[in-house]
Image (cartoon, rainbow over all chains, first blue to last red; front, side, top):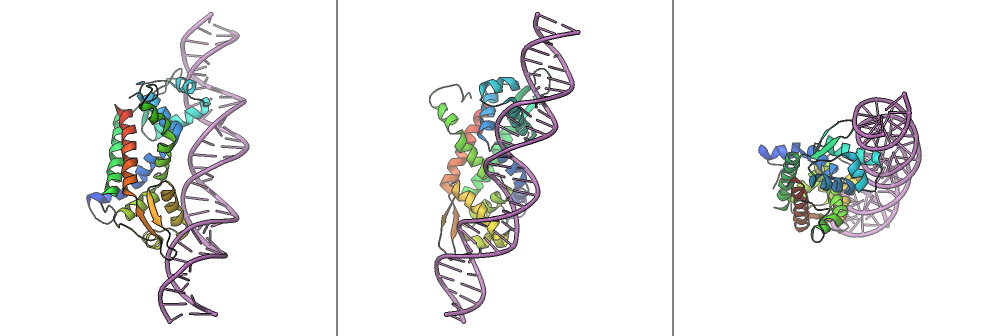
Length: 108
Length: 108
DNA sequence: ATCGTTTATCGTCGATATACGATGAATAAT
DNA sequence: ATTATTCATCGTATATCGACGATAAACGAT
């Protein structure tokens, strides 16, 4: 429970807090959560498809996608004509695990 | 997995996305995660104690605490002399559950 | 009554986030 | 070759965040 004071293994929790906070930040916008949902149930899709589904400008969607890609939660193949975005399910699962570990340790 | 298209129960996931995003946002700063850790292993403490533990101005700590309180993750008793802040472990557990549910559904 | 401590809030400032339109590059279709 | 489509990026405007110092209120101690 005391991740701050106990040295050793839990000290990594302390050191990883900025990275964990960055993970939270990547998910801290409703549009990005919706995009993630959309990607998750489609196995892959292009930017345009998301633009059509949501009421946002194409540049805005592209920015949100970039945030998710930079956070490592979404992979994409830049094919010029029709870039393919897809959820990185492994990365997402890892992040979920670290978030749960952290939050659970704060509930104990 | 398809929380966007399936009507009924999963539709609530869709409706709750802004609230979930707000939860992520409250945790999207390393200082707040550290404060949460600090509170979690102390059962309760005052603002000053956190100020002494971290290298931040008192007003900054107070602001971060306000964010956590507004998000419902921390409760506090405003006693003028020495306000007592404490983690709302139930709320934190609930949030963790909803985050896990959401992220897991995106990994399935 | 005065002083010191603690806290919340205000104002400010720089940095970042978010939205949009415009633009240029790449490519498919004609 | 021309047109249409898709995408990433740029520039811009606005809003919010995050940090700080200053300040006022509350209260214990002297």
